[in-house]
Image 1 (cartoon, rainbow, N blue to C red):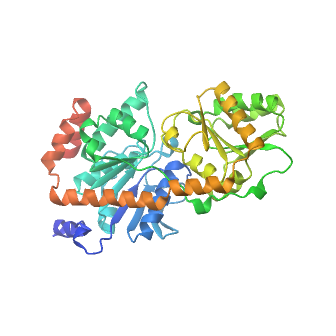
Image 2: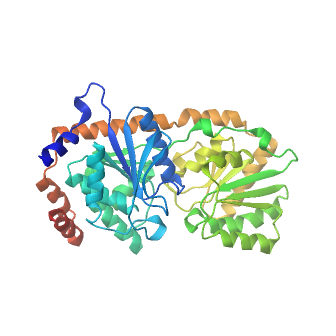
Image 3: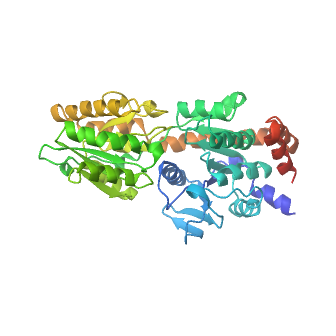
Length: 428
């Protein structure tokens, strides 16, 4: 009787004349933590809710934020009592978290489980659990990873296992897709892979030229996590050189992280306290105000699949200078909106000087740039394309549901210890 009840709860909504989907977005990274993945999940959830779908978010507890919370939308968030380890990633539980997630999915009558980010333990486990319960799964990849270090090799093997039974895979850029196909060996699953880029809400990132200085000084804005991957070591070399060569330039640095101390030591050593401003961690609601005060936005990332910060800066009317890495060249047109530089100090300094000269001689019209970004990117379009993927997955699941033996075959095809281990866990 319980199995029949579960099957009725999980019945596909496609037979309804006005299909309303019940979607679970699963990831270790969500509010109160802020970042690109978190903003993607939040924005996607809000637009899906506006389309009439039921959306919940499942993540782990953040400090005292435990249990069920409601965010604007209304968006129901399950902060599960799971133990985080490094960088807010859950400790791998293998099958321990299955009863909790199963209870949530049955209680909410979920039709689709949508996991995000390769490094999310909770997301990877949810893909396996949902496949076991015959719930269609979708995975979105947000980052690029390598092939030559132990951490990446282990992660790639985990992804190969969890994605072997995923019904659909979404990547935020074509570079991200190529990287994921190689890492997870998805050559046979290209038909299941879709590219849906990130977006920006233009109404929240509008220019305000009155916030800029009128004394002839140029402000370069940097907003990012101050960690190695974001190229903070490059920024340590860029700031003193540019301040020495261009006395009319100031820097505004927003963000926090392990590399902030290196920046502060450089500023003190070079005596640039009056020309470099540190804002610390900037709440997302204040990002637009900080961007509106600048003329040029600088991104020094060493790896990036898609940088939402570039869209936010361009939408606020700033000329963008970024490293030419990963999926960055796909984000904005060059060179009128964004200048690309090699990930080294001389190239970035040279392109910053070009951007500053352009802003001094022929300033970019902030509203014209804002309108260009508004036409190129929209969260409504992202939500619509994602919904199309959902309906396609549900229709495929209805036509050809995957049996237990077929799942075992998917795991065994992985080969090696990973394949054998996945088969044993599936049997348990």
